[in-house]
Image (cartoon, rainbow, N blue to C red; front, top):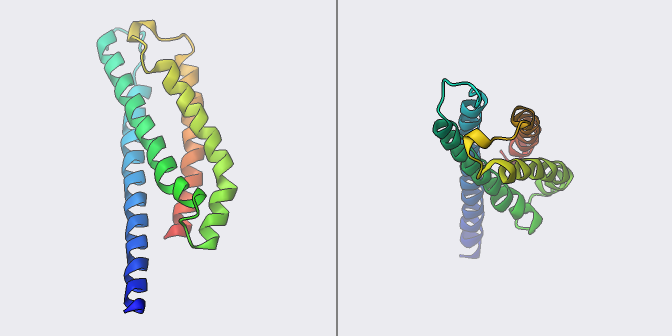
Length: 152
């Protein structure tokens, strides 16, 4: 019976990890779609109303924060809290986490700066800020993929 519990416990952990990974990658895909939408809009051109730009930006900020939370409170917190038993994953997570945390801060700074702005009140640095965010997200995704590869 104990061996059976261990097997089921291991399966439960693997299923939880798989669910966390799926949730993270789903949130990431949604975030990237929204990023592309907002990156393709010039808020100072008249092709989009200020309300449309504002709505796109709000949607993007919301999914950005959801994506960050999925990584932090799902995958990384699991490693930080010692719930991950595989040493290779724990070690890699510890190695990557400081860089991932830097990308989190860049994303949170962007969110704080733009989440409540009206589209016609966007900061003049919006394009530059979006570019910096895009670079940070690219680094984050690369780091996450390294961790996800080891998990699988």
